Amino acid sequence: MRSRQAELLVQEHRPNTSVTSSWVARRFARQPRLTAGLLVVAFAAIVLGHAADGLHAQPASRDPLTWLGRIERGGAIEEFMALGIAARGNYLFVARSCELDVFDVTVPTSPAKVASLAHPTVPTLASEFARENWIRLDGSLLFLAGSPPVIIDVADPRAPRLVSVLANDVSASAVAVAGSRAYVVQHSVLQIFDIADPSAPVLMGEEIGGGESPISLAVDGTDVLLWRMFGGVLLDAADPSAIRRKAQFRLAMDREYCEQDEARQRRSIAYRGQRAYVTCGRHLGIIDFTRPPTKMDNGLPSYTESGLFETQQFATHVTLLGHRVLLTDLQYLYVLDARDPEHIVELARFEHTVASDIDQGYGVAMSAAAGNRVYVSSDHYGPGSGHVDILEIDLPRPVGMVFMPWLGRQAGR
Image 1 (cartoon, rainbow, N blue to C red):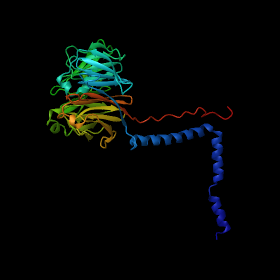
Image 2 (cartoon, one colour):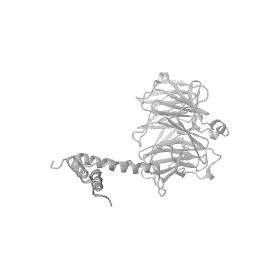
Image 3 (cartoon, rainbow, N blue to C red):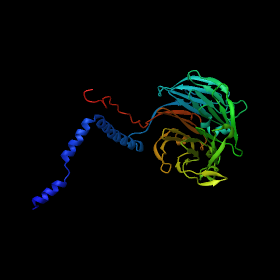
Image 4 (cartoon, rainbow, N blue to C red):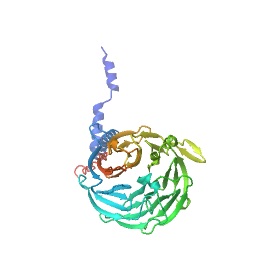
């Protein structure tokens, strides 16, 4: 049995929780703003925690892709052969040789052709290998590569009009747009135009690469990526009159794999946040320019892929939608989470063409996105094979702020 003296000693060193609790209560009672602020912070931490978990994992019972409808060849499009597609709002733009068709897809089960515009542009041989470079939509302006490249005003999608020919003496295999500049690839030359006045483009500068002609082109800010047959180069075009090379890249498996078949020469490239997403053969390769280069080559840092994703058929097109990657091959559309290039996660896939319709790998499939709609164009040169599928994609919902107007008001005020 403990002595009375020992009990008194324990009580002396035991924290007085009642006193502490009452002090905290008085403190918060005197400062209601502090109390409310701490409650909001705690609530926000819980919400953000759940939101972060949701970004990294899709519920197993929820399919991120829902098929809504299809535009068939022989219906709205008699001669499909799409050379490029682009989307804005509830309108889909389908570019063909010498013609642009516009569809209202407000009701995806019954899309309606609402406009058609004749234009002088025909595709080049090089653009046949990378049709996704043939069309670029920037706000109200639509750009078509080919011979010659043109600018079309689609501010009113139901009344598109030809604004100007970008360059009469240019046969462009690819076009890209960033701000008030248009970037055009002609053979082995990159040309940059000032399009502040779209009706009167002005040549600002050019880069003569020499050797292999670029097949694909991507722009982010003043960074320009040119993807040639067996490798690519990253350019700094901040000063169009003095374009400089920043780095070069290639896929480690590229040359040996892609030399085997002409169909594997198809290239698509997307670029954002110093990462390049490149298709080759049955692969998507991701090059991360924030990582240390593999080696130095002729004074330039040289990079290879940080990660690879293998497709079922020949990959033909890649585009970015938020943090997701939309990848198409001749049979499927893949939705990927590639934030960690070394651990690419397939979230969903959609079969836009059955395998029996694929003719020796020759053909093309492209995708375009607007809001939560994704469009997949498929054309395999076979009878009745051309169509555009309309899908809805389940995008992560942004975390909303919770507003409480009574926060911060003192009692009695």
